[in-house]
Length: 89
Image: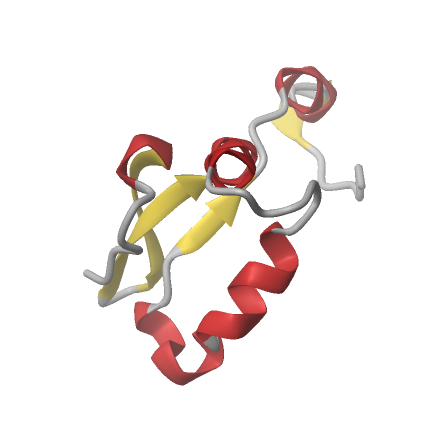
């Protein structure tokens, strides 16, 4: 698995990108906090990730998630006892 140096505090755990690709998962909000602490401007996470060129890593690239408790409640809605799929963002 590939880790980004200096962002250990933002690691949430691991996830599966493909059947055979376990990757590190980062909390994107925590990563932004770390970047701010390092002197980067606000909302610089996307620009920072572009400099890494994650496309080169393919299925080995880490995942970056935004933890959203409100979204969890929206997704829990069910229809006739089965989860239903819908776009929430």
